Image (cartoon, rainbow, N blue to C red; front, side, top):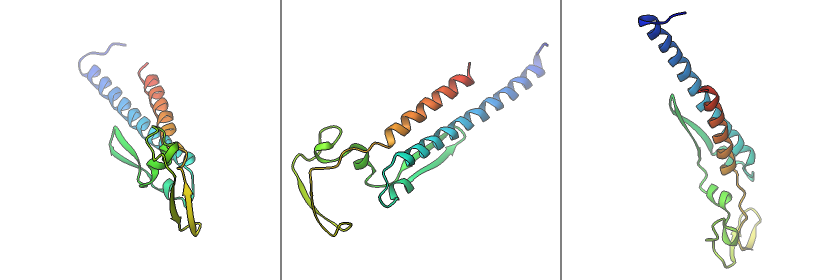
Length: 135
């Protein structure tokens, strides 16, 4: 089979559209995977952390997964003496817990990573799928 001139241009255009559609599919698969895994790994108290993990498609080739909860960073990286970078408060503190109806003294909370593992998994998926597409 020989391609030249108009036939070659048409074949390339068709191939290009197919590749674009496959890349769009891979991007959406990846953000959905990240969202699903982050929700699966996120600890649940009242469900607001999981509910705040959302996807927004920006254009054909880009989308974002965001965590809207204001306390997500404290869950992911820990607080006090347990903070991942060791930069948390080093002395105990006391606060009123509406949930428990009493004062609580704490030295912090251990990290419960849900975001980093989800993003790493999504990155592996994206890289693998893109590599297969362009082999």
